[in-house]
Image 1: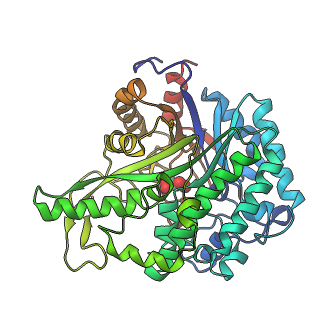
Image 2: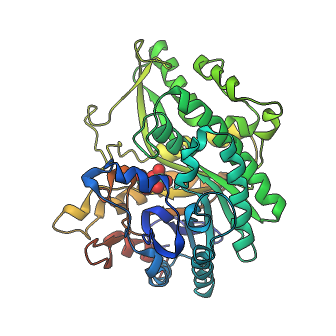
Amino acid sequence: MKDLYSFPHDFTWGAGISAYQTEGGVNAGGRGVSIWDEFEKKKSIRNKHSASVACDFYNRYASDLRSVKWLGLSHFKTSISWPRIQPSGKGNINKAGADFYDRLTDEMLEQGIEPWYVAYHWDLPAELQKKGGWTNRDTVFRFLDYCDLCFGLLGDRVNNWIVMNEPLVFVGAGYFMGIHAPGRRGMNNFLPALHHVNLANAQGIKNLKNLGAKHVGTAHSFASIHPSTKLDVDIKAANRVHLAINQSFIDPMLGYGYPTEKLPFMKKIERYWEQNDGQLLLASPDFWGVQVYTREIVKYAWWMPYIQARIISAKSRKKIVSSIGQEVYYPALSEVLDWFIQHKASDTPVYITECGISMQESFLEQPFDDTYRIEYYQNVLETLKPHIQNSNVKGLFYWSLMDNFEWAEGYFAPFGLFHVDFKTLKRTPKKSAEWVRNLLGQ
Ligand code: BGC
């Protein structure tokens, strides 16, 4: 470690990607259709971009893993594409799809890279969405079967499992705001999806542990929430937003239940509640994945349905914003950790399972000059210092290994340490990649 303080020698340093954002090969080996393939067909993606080729990780994984090694990292996180190994979300494993993850895992191990697999990073089989997707309780059972398949396939070689990636985002954006797949809107979609995803997440953790998985966690996104003024109404409004976005997806698992007292609209979740759900929602993961990209400033707004609060956009606050409109605010992660470590009230370790930023260098003349990204990481790592020393923060995964398909933003928002030319698929290390390599003393 050259220009920062020393991290513990056993600190986990890794990089991450996800299946849909990088693999491409959407028609290869009998892969089924996912809700994101369908969403793309509706031209819902910026510039009508498509992930059908993406980074072609499906074919180029071996050299991409060499890039992980080149960076000096020995942990790599990606997700399993559900429709690749179980095309309709039901039934037997698809051999050709399973073979891909077999080869990928063997390659990681051969190169001395420890695999971390996310079971669900948003690419639900479209067949399941026809029956309501996460609004249908049956999807919980389908998901548990799928987790069995994943463990049966890779459990002999893989220790680290992350059951879900950012439930808040795929439920909030996909089932409330309609800006992510499957493009559903409103409370009548959001509440059942919230409850079923929480059940699937908790049961998924228990399931994998029962099957013998060694290190099972789940990854949540959080934002640091600040009130816009010291007025009581704004403080209360910020608190409601905090409950809605930071707690609704973790509190049931921690045994605190849904925050219905301060968020009365959530009481309607009773409609989807079955006997024993209180128990079924509980789980004790071996670790928590924490992912924080920004802070939000909240103001009281009596006219806003459900929550009587509004988020003041970073742009209107004249802050430096990322290419996806988020404020660039270095202390957000450590502020969230201050709260979360107390809130979870246990010694369960935390991994920063994603950490990254994007400011559109792909469209600049110097696409490899991402000095801002180095500054971002330097500052964020600095704010992590007390947590590394005093609490159980055990590792960090850079997001992302390479530029990739940024969901509704298409290729507009590059998050990579490696630049990808999406015409030639050539990868080139950016300045930040050199910095990471240097930081780890290569
Ligand atoms: C998601 C990633 C995404 C990143 C940057 C996270 O919410 O897990 O898939 O690329 O944010 O927006």
